[in-house]
Structures are given as C-alpha cells and as structure tokens.
Amino acid sequence: MHTIRLAGGPAFPCADGDTILRAGLREGLGLSYECSVGSCGVCKFELVDGAVEDLRPDAPGLSERDRRKGRRLACQSRPAGDCTVAMRLDDAIRPPVRPQRRSAVLEAARRLTHDLSEFTFRTDGAADFLPGQYALLQLPGLAAPRAYSMANTPNGEGVWQFIVRRVPDGAGTAALFAMAAGARVSLDAPYGQAYLRPSPRDVVCVAGGSGLAPMLSIARAFAEGPADGRRLTLYYGARAARDVCGEAEVAALPGFGTRIRYVPAVSDPEDGGFAGRRGFIHEVMADDLGRCFDGCDVYCAGPPPMTLALEDLLVREAGLPVDRLRFDRFF
Ligand code: FES
Image (cartoon, rainbow, N blue to C red; front, side):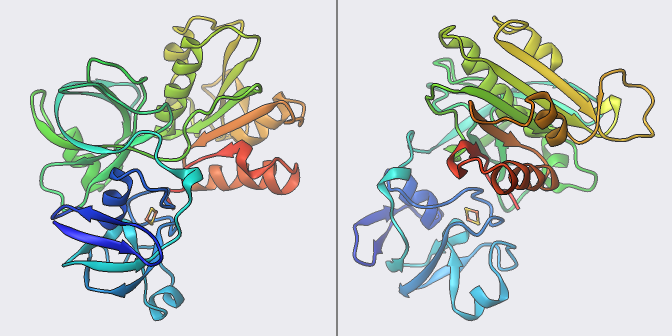
C-alpha cells in the first residue's frame, strides 16, 4: 500500500498494483478522466515527488510536448512508493458510485450480428453502476484491462451485460470471444462520465458499433422511469444492413412506439439490402429532429469519426451547451 498526496490537497491510499487514477476514484475523489485506458489524455498530471511505473509508455493520451514536460497519465501510472502529484480536483465530478474490483463469471455469450456479441457476467453482490458507464475487464492472457460498457441496468443480482465487437486481430476481443461459460475474470467498475443524468428534457441516444451497449443501458433505464411526457430516441448508425443491431432490444421496452423510438440508418450507398434511412447517423438524427436540439440531452457512443462529427454538428454548428452532449472519449 502506498500513499498518494495531491499537492495542496488530500492524501489517499493506493493498493499494490492499482493506478493512481483508480485508487483516487475508489476514495471518491473528483479526479478528471474519461477512458481509463490511456487514450483520451484527460487524466494528465505532474509527478512532484516519488516514482511511478508507466503501464503504457506509448499511450496516445500524451503528446510529445506532454512527454517533454514530464506529464503523465494517472490511469497508466502505478506508484512505486509514496508519491506527491499535481492534479486538479473537482468536487462536481466526484464518482457517483465508487469503483470496486470484483471477480466475475461468464454466464453466457449470445451472437447479435456477424461481429457483435452480448456477454453476460455475474458477480457476487449488486451490479452497482449508472446507465451509460463502463467496466474494466482483465481478460485472460492480457497485460492491460479492456473497457466495455454495460448494456443492462444496475441490479441487485450482480448481472453485467456487455456488447462487444470482434475486432480483427484485436487481442482483447480474441481473448473474450475465446472464453467459455464458467470462466472467471476480474471486473473493475463502474467508470465513466457519460451516464444518464436527471433532466426535464427529451433524451437522444446516438450509437454506432458496440456503442450500442451504453445507449441501450440508458434506453432501458429511461423505460424503467416514470412516463412523464419525455421521449427517448435511439439512433443507430451502421455501415451496412448486416451491421444494424439493437431494434429487438429497444422494441422490447415498455413505451416503445409511444415515448421510445429506434431509428437505424445505413451509410454505405452500395449496400442494397436495407429499406430504412440512408446516410451518416448524425445527419439522420439532425434531420429527424428538424435541426432543433433545444429540448434534448444527447448521449453518444461509437467510433471516433461518428462522435467527432456529432460534436461538430451539435456544439460547434448548432451551439448546444457542451454539458448537453455526453460521451466518454476513447481516442
Ligand atoms: Fe487516462 Fe483517458 S483517463 S488517458
């Protein structure tokens, strides 16, 4: 166990093997982060005193300039002893649920499309998270954990469902797709800032690929909530007809067809097997809403080009306040 002291702030314990970010979040501290896997760069800090092991020296979250200036990533820094770090603390972003490590058993895998599958794990104790958050799974044979968003809603039975895309040559998905029912993993959760917040506005979810998982979790939580006149639409962008996914799950929700809608679109103009809408999903969503976003909060998860295009359209072009578009940056 090491002690991490925030320069000008509190100190907190960091268990052997834990990262500075995860240890701080376990203590309920408001540390800035999004991806937890070294990609977004939001968790940068400066080491004032002590030594840390860098778990991902080539992490894309740090620029060359950051490295020259000695900046590090809290999500990729494992202390080698007691440390003092300079890092911003913000009470407004304290974790609503403190992350914990658990042992999880794979109960079932279900194929959804040619490359997307749903994996159901179970832990002892409750599955405690907010809709839209993710877990870090330590998979067999891999050095670093992988981040996967929950597709179900929090529950007392300890059920965690993930929708994962099999990435060609991806070590993480190869390990996960090779697992048999009964296999155990370490599941560390919950993480993420793009969780469903209380609001008087309608909810718009935009998903692509395995980004369906957190948007489905949000849609499911919305369906469990009161019918208070608000509406939710889940827009799903796919490249081709065979990639379209999620309709059956959304259609099974109470309120589907009245206060909950599902709108898929296919972007490949060459794909002739789809009778629905065509084009990039952010454009389909904008047209569907008449390019008026005043009355909605937007949640998004999917490939980086989709997320960036949505951010451009909503925040830079339409002037949507930044806190009304929520997504965790995994790039
Ligand atoms: Fe550390 Fe994203 S949270 S790089």
